[in-house]
Length: 545
Image (tube, rainbow, N blue to C red; front, side, top):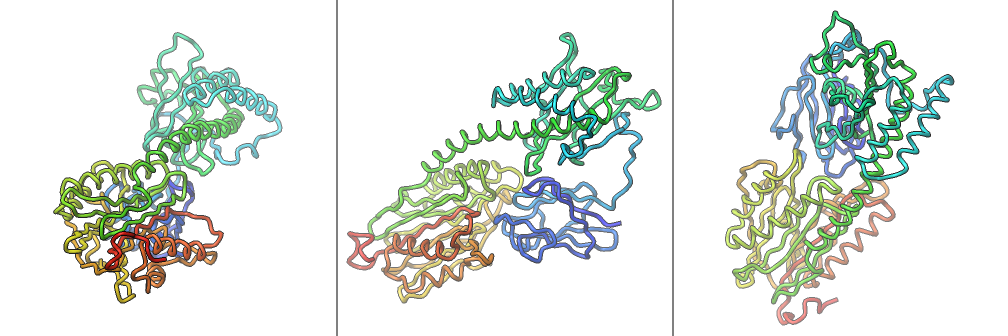
């Protein structure tokens, strides 16, 4: 029997991939057996290799790392049933060779008597239950129409469900938060009832198997778990709640204590259809709060980016950032240090959306504080920032970054790259080069708690400039799916020696927009250009056109 991988988290949650080939590559490339189009995923990120009946997962050098059960994967590791493989934006669960499911009993002494997929449940409603479905939907829609406050909304749903299902004694909604199911609303038919209990096994299985389940008390020969047994539960319907992208939102449970008035499969079908509307309402509620949070986060982010450009004596600085969404994970900065040197940086937080934006604020702040407190020790700055990001990040959340310090007296540029693309320098003779080699490029910030970063130093001549950019630039794609690439950036910069930094940045953006055409932007685009002015041009940073 072959093993399989099931996407547990990500845009294609629920998808399954049979591991029938000797090896299956996970990545963004066209030839990958498991393909994720998120730009944070490398073209060939990781692979699963089969050796007889044993499967191994191996990291293929994905720049944002591969994690197994929350730990960074170095090299390869054997897989066991239930292991979780995480690449940026996605988590896959490994299932060993399939075994038959015992439908006779569950761990809690309850017999499974019905199963329904929560996806497309409305199409499976029978004619006999159509009237009940309509009645239930009308009651639930009436309950959903009054508020976007999630606790209030869920309480109204449970109150309506106790009317729709007169045999139900209790209702419970658990909401998924940080990979845990948290009780958010509960309702008793009788005011003097005790607190509601539930089986973690049952509710978690509903999420993991993506199945609505109807269960009955198996009888005296199978003792239920103590909490279920003492509560008097004899019949349970447990329905998972999923977003339109099949992301788990939570679980809806109804239970009954009278076995003679137990739920049947028609009840399960009706509740599953109702759950679809509840899921949509939960998404709308979360979206309403998220839009408020996003508006605030966008304002905060704008406050952490510097002015468009800065004229600091013999050097001129220009920056640009365009998030793919309302908020993004890219950040940049340039400023003068207490010792008179200048600092410039550009970073990219793995992931997108609100979580990435919050980490962006953290990373931008930590970089600013570290550079100002340790202006003479760029290696120490990188170590300190890395440690802070590691302690504050969630599983799989990290930051690629380039840190630069410029001495305006000696014109020495010192750089540290943490998993980021090398800066590109436009030399005085019109050629370009990338000073940070692959060997000198360190791990992204936050991957390991302790890591020693290397510095690279060069001297800038009059008229030379330096370009920092995010992978939203180099990996932007045209209508054929061909990336813009770092090589093209170098080609566009060739011959721009002596061109003021704002003009260098704008010309690069103009070429990028021509290249991608009408293609949708999928990643944040950020560029920083700074350079030493030509001799006699210290009064105006943008004298040349």
